[in-house]
Amino acid sequence: MVNNYREWPSPVNTSNGLGEQHFLQQALFNQNFPKAQKDMMNKMIQEALAKGIIHSHDSQSITQSASEGSVADYVLFTSPNIKLTAKMDEDKKIVNEALFLKLLSERPELPKGFSKHFPRVYAISHKPPYGYIMEYFNMKSLGEHIFKAKRKKESAVKALHLILKILFNVYTKTRDYRIVPNIQNLYLQRITERLEEARMANSKFNKLSNDRITINGQKFETPEFYLEQIDKNVSDFHVNFTTFVHGDCHPENILVGFNEDKEIDIKFIDPKDWYSGDYMYDVGKLAHYLFGTGPAQMVHAPPVPQIDVGNASLNYHLNTEQFHVDELLTIIHKKVAVFAAKVQDSKWKQRYKLSLASNLLGTPPARLKSENSKLINAAFMLYGEGLISLANCV
Image 1: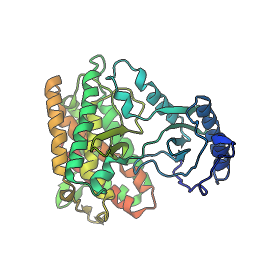
Image 2: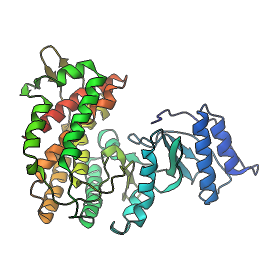
Image 3: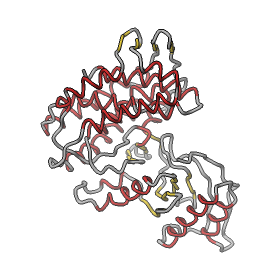
């Protein structure tokens, strides 16, 4: 994924009649972009123009990150009222993501109006470099609202209630008892693969994660020990239906907007193209961030863990009290409990713990490959939280 954000040149006025297409092409070609990316973005702009999406004659353009958590690469401001996000990747899976978004409004099983909570896709590049142009939202992520924005707690609580209402409405409407989630593949295999990747990325992590370890004074076995126990009792985590899933439903992929009347708008970005799965995976993705990723790396002064490889110990403190995390998690737990009782999902508590473990233990690889010390520190703390959650499954 390309994540190189560049500044556009000074705002340009195209009232000379050349129009936006000329302006956007000039803006692209004035930048130090790889030629393949320029060509791809130009082609998608032409496709959007042909569909009548861009039509203003007064244009200016900059690039910036779409949000704290968005993996989109470039935001194209084509006029005061027309803003587009261009997302690019060398992996063809981004095309499937774009098609997934385009089909949301056509899927009959989804609740009416559900697709309005996702960006509209205007053009897709089906050939490398792959990518698509989509709707841009000038909104902060839920993660920013909780851990960075100077908003009252009530705003985050209100937003979370609405997010859960939207998600559990679609989970209710899309239950499919013909297919059941594969717990080994969805959770256990994912943990194993991510641990292997993280161990290859960092020698200190490799040593620490292959030993029994003391985390904040409490002793734990290796991840493999717990994984083996869970695999032996995998029926304890069974669920007999699938639902629609976002697949990457953490708070940086949930955008929250507050208008002048304090009404809330919710947008979900960067979904996986899974179509269906275990709803608890989404729940774990949302919850693990609140007590793990957010306090570990989103706060103003992230904590620094004490790592002693020789004595196999890891000590850290994540500040959750300041951000009312327990209250937010309680809201999630109550919503899940009501839904689980309604659909007779009796194993939800065990699967919730496993989902937390899977999401937490899936975070270290990318962070350990970074040269950012804040992210590397977060990787070790998130491993600690993940191992604790994994142990709680046994």
